[in-house]
Length: 287
Image (tube, rainbow, N blue to C red; front, side):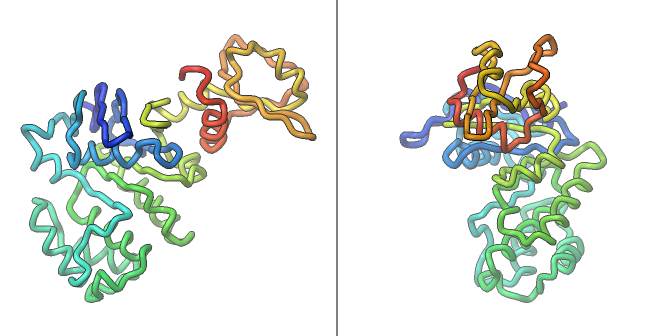
């Protein structure tokens, strides 16, 4: 059974429209949620958390829907958001104990252990923490109540390099038993290149791709070399071509039957390259 499943999910907020989002995330995956600012990533996360009600479509979390199983769904989700979610006047442990009452598997000992590992003083007031420290505290709490799903909205950009490495190692350990998953919205695509198993790519409220990262990588190629040789490739396969004084570079829809001039350099794209060329090309080809 999939841990998260959406079918034709749509939501209009003001002038913004999230439209027809469908994906199925199995357990045991780290899912990177990517897209330009305003693509709809946070709106999608709010829908997955039950903070917004969809206009159309459906959401299942661990086989349950919010209409009949809201408490059980929330019990199994850990969250980290850039917004301050905890009480600034309380200490870190006071916050954890207060909000931990709403989770059936909250462990005070686990919370204390993570605060220690993250070098956070448990008796310090939450409001006196830096932005990065607040997110570390939220992360510690998300891990303290035995969640099956972590939903994390852009936390890594506020962590120093040393903690970012620890953060990603913890996420890998979190999914290791194959029963849990992570949805991580981030603009640091280099991290996803080395650790994500699944990608949801969004632009302007639309889902461009949702699936395993290897499927995404095998669907495209970056081709570099002389522009006229790249233009010999069928135009419908070229997402976007850029030229400069040193040559040209393009994102190409890859086919096992496709052939490239032997003078061209062909490589699998990074996630950053995919985002850049798809955005620049205005998605001339459907994924």
